[in-house]
Image 1: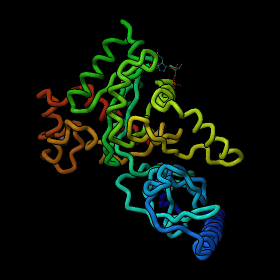
Image 2: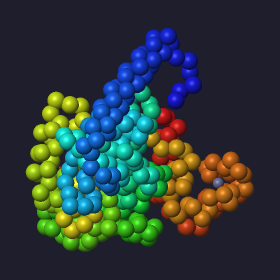
Image 3: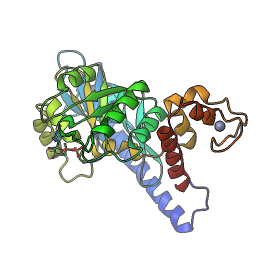
Image 4: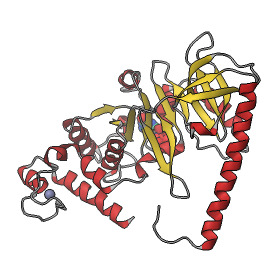
Length: 339
Ligand code: GDP
Ligand code: ZN
């Protein structure tokens, strides 16, 4: 939040928005209470939030005879905001169920809303799959930005090089460099082509154990990957977009199950994840090979630019940190300074 003083008009607007918000919350609570009081609800059971529409969520039953079926549910505002991927306790009902509790989140993807407040858009993600391709050529630093951002929220990243069928003389060197660099740093690197089906089996196996999101610049083949991995996705996407007609929820994240195990959480908002806000001190930590040297500089407030006794610069000179990654670190920092 900015520290500058708000104008009267801005304060008035904020008060108005907050009043509207509490009115909405009260309406929602009374709906949830009505359903709870009707006594026609089933027993408490575990479920998974598949997607959300403002005041309602779609919950998938994860136990019992109805496991795998979906139900729209109300929830009380004291549960906070429920998001795709949340694990909940809920009670079945007609026509709507009610969510009565949310289990603690293991991770959360957030992004700033138009008011500058951080808003959670998906929960319990284990893997961020950074998709790049020979074409469109990867923007400089893009992988590093995603790696830093993933580290900032404690989710394991992997690098997926898609469209390997399109590697040619102009791009071979760069792609090989990316592959080797990130493997050497200890990251999982997968090579795939949705055109020739190269690497799809390995990718399927890799995804089977996790809840993943695909991120990366437009045109690298994220939609193609989703279609290749979710054969019945067209049907589901169609069904979901039908329900969304006339509402402003088209960017809401949705959870899909891979046939071979594992889950995908997808939305345009998530695909742009790497462009979200990062804190300056998270950037250094996000460079995995820098970590052994952090805290070993002579000066506590070392900027790692020119100081004598800088452990990071020493590692650079010794070749433990590559010039390219150092440049990338400096570039990412400079983009934060401008913000
Ligand atoms: P998105 O913007 O990341 O969702 O990318 P799309 O899935 O829309 O793909 C962009 C373009 O790349 C489309 O023309 C696809 O047909 C093409 N494409 C996707 N995957 C591959 C691949 O493995 N090989 C080749 N040659 N083209 C691909
Ligand atoms: Zn230093």
